Length: 209
Image 1: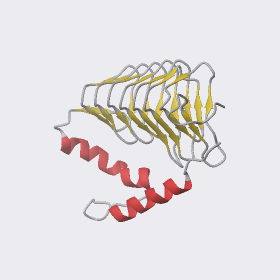
Image 2: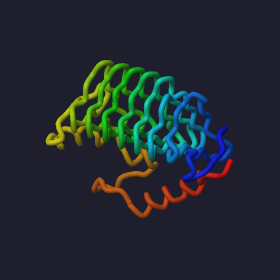
Image 3: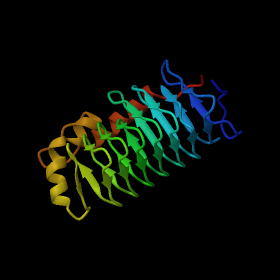
Image 4: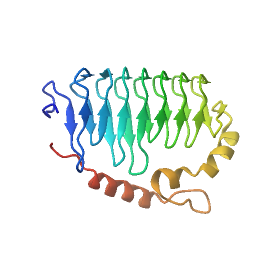
């Protein structure tokens, strides 16, 4: 594994628990990219400011994967991230506990959430969202700024909030992502949420390898 340094031209490759990143020697990783924990990289390029953080389950990127600047890829204690081959992950994209199959295009600012599957050769365009537990079919397109939700996915414009919420609510984002129940009014106890996230951060605090 490469030496771990900060702003000296070498990316941050940090141990979490007993796991350290595993990087294909042919990968090109920007000097301010950060990889934490069980991150397995066959990727071709990891861009500037990208963060790949494995909090329990692994992050696995296949061959010819391009991760652009400031992307965030994060696994959780329950949900790994698996990315296939020949995938482009655009700038400012965020992936959480999901599966991306081969030849997928994720444009700038896309969001792909827990237990999602984006099938082979699908496109998720600029600022589009793939919501929790959603399956985007093979070769499907989620248009700019639209939302895919459900299995099979319905692809809806952002002005269709009521239709999106009707599908999204029973998928129970707080329970899946954070292990929390909603209050009867549909809200989440933010003290409980932030306390849990703080404790998780302590458990998975990066270490020098």
